[in-house]
Length: 238
Ligand code: URA
Image (cartoon, rainbow, N blue to C red; front, top):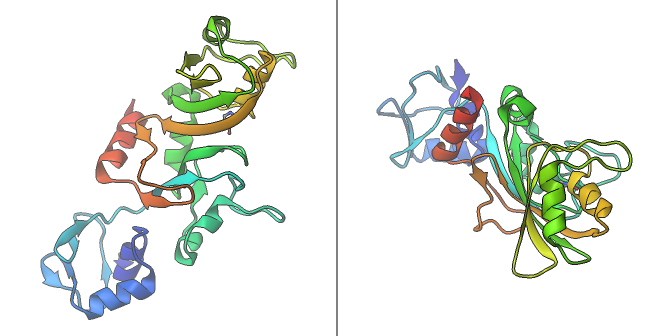
């Protein structure tokens, strides 16, 4: 059994203070009846929770899609640098969210924030084959030989062995789409540096079934939709 304000604020849509106001205004119903108190406790299982008549999922864990801007580190705390968690409002910094997978400080794009450790573990497990795609711009010109090298699986100068990866060239000769099935440290930068074409811009566009929402400006975030969560659950069952 958990408090109504905990369940509702845990969705990431309202702070506890906002939940209190919603309940006071009679805008929240639980199992068909107007909720009387934000402190009342309920079982999440089978809960019919609504705000202004719209069903709200009482999921235990939170999953947010963040459009990570450059300049933020993919960590929960850091003594010197600004973390991606600092892009969230205060009430969401206290619910145990962490980034599921890392992007470099200067990399932009799709970052999943969750407090579901088992979900993060599954998405990052090589056994689940969660592909990630990145838009990349290099200092140089991408050609057939780069695509072939990526497809063959590169071994870098420092001995790092990379799984076969995709490199689709785009209209501009210095731009491409890279698909990775793993996420080793600075992997794309290292692979392209090894090809003599250093990365000048990198942005993650997809992660498994999730695609960066074009409506999110850098620094903006939103909770995953029910469809996106279902798609992640399907990956986990694989
Ligand atoms: N590869 C990189 O080099 N950096 C990232 O942030 C992600 C993939």
